Length: 219
Image (cartoon, rainbow, N blue to C red; front, side, top):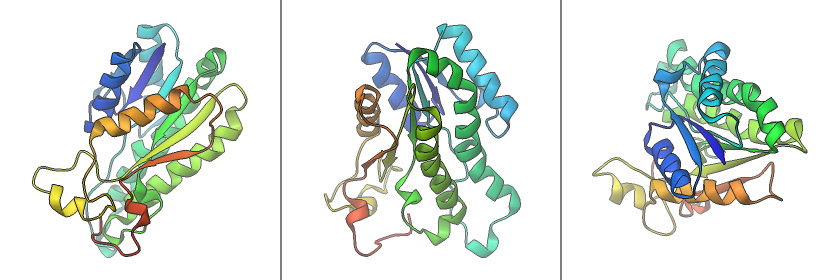
């Protein structure tokens, strides 16, 4: 079993890669140094690197993202907007496009690491919300485009792997009253990788944040 994890050196990506390895997968965990996912050429280069190391591909995890910086809507620059959409939406699209022939051959799986920001309006993270919403739509569009050979699913984390000192505030955002861990997301990826009758759907791993009727915080 061979997996490529884009964004594999970040908090979530590294946890996903470690969990997959523990489950017996061969994994290429690729950070930004392995290819600039803001371009189609960079996405192709990343996939080529993974194929050279793994010899094939059974699972692609699109965990790369950018632009998660609080900013008033009026102050968002074009560069910041492009940064948010770059690796998150554009990267997910073109990495999947480059990997698609190999995933078709193996009847593989694509997992998009989305965000509850795709489903909630956070004014201070407008570009991030829009990029994650685009990525979440790709989960559904690509599930149709690549069927029946390839399944495409999503995982939408809430407050997991939060910054030190933010645990109490972020815990109040959930109905469970606690924050999650990066391994909670990794466990969802492993589950979906083996859930052979699931495609075009997203698993929300947020401790019930989306159930909150009022917003405790902007993010």
